[in-house]
Length: 175
Length: 148
Image 1 (cartoon, rainbow over the protein chains, first blue to last red):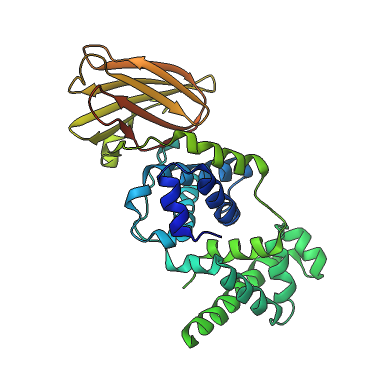
Image 2: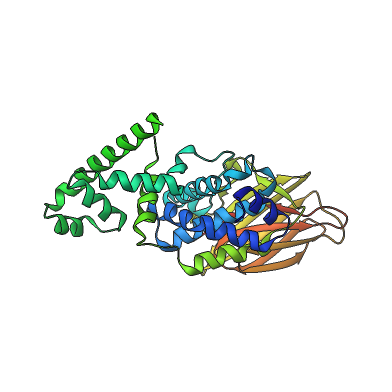
């Protein structure tokens, strides 16, 4: 299996299979980021497409080719946030990131596994609630599943995410 | 500190409930044919250059600059389609052509001696213009997203 830097170089040199491999490796993360920014499926598709189009124009200017995955998810996040804000009446003004956002590492396989393990270690209702958030359920459906009043879902969600974030940050500090 | 979006994205990925749609993957792969080897990319100039030129916000001006050429595009949305009225200065010379591109359609136009060109009926979404000049590397604008 070729590493990301090799794939990027090969795609820049005209190797279509390398481009396809980049897509299969990073496309799912990019989609998840766009959707996590609150975009509809149509807008998320635009954000993902936009990031790939920017990569086509920046093959030669990516400072760390081995971090192209981080660059792509950082780019799609910027596109997604701009689309979400409907900036400039539809004209996306996203600047291409020069460096990937280090926080994007949570999307790497190791980061995801650690995150999920941490979720499994949470107490209820946070453990179930965070799994339901990941499943895209609305507050009312979550309330029904958890047997909680729907008005308390929002504050509980914020508290659980904050707890998870703190645990992950502590793990990062310990490493 | 991890951004909420990355955090939620990692959870969504792990849950496997919202996989990337096949057509989104297919579009990304298909975009590779839009690669232009050796092209120079014209960056968008400061956002002050982008403004609505009609009261109803249906038309916008956007400027790109590279390699001594300035692209001014007036993009108009109407009836679900996009029209582009462009101007390249200085005049790029005899034999120069522009491609007005969306991921699904490319319209090729000659450039008038005044530097003007027009392309109509493009689908909404991502848009880029490429100027081909004999004896020079092509110049492509960065992609902009146009949606009504």
